Length: 231
Image (cartoon, rainbow, N blue to C red; front, side, top):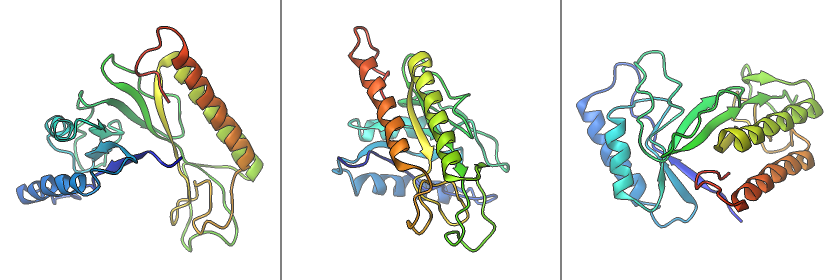
């Protein structure tokens, strides 16, 4: 059927580079990024900031994005619980449509809904597997490692079962696994970076994903289901 895209705005600065000019450029380019694919049905969420990288006036900018495009959801500061070492964390802006945390390995510790915003686990997982002959030529790493395809798949299935528990009993609405493919030194993908090797047992991955989605739909079909109890 296609992909649901959360469109991030690239971070604007690194250490000691935050200037008035940079912020003006950020605002201009944020508008341009929203204007260009405005009619793409795949984009369901705008993400002005990620993990406090270059974050400034997050509450104000989140409100502006929401007003500029009221047809889409807005995640003002995805993974607000994480932060680069060289700046003070902006944290949760308190507005927008998500309470979004990033937890590795997770999913325990994910945020909970606050009555106005959906609980989102914007990043979790990151479990890796070395595949000889299909790794980027640098030191490879992941948030955790498993020795075999079967073990990696077992770990994934367990994580998704935990996600289901959080969905059913803690109101979690979103869970985004890291990640679809390896990216250079990051060996935590479902596929190797060259897309040549499937690193998990795909039938089992599909089965657990399908089961969690089915349970989400069953929850929403029950009388009194809340508007944020979706997956």
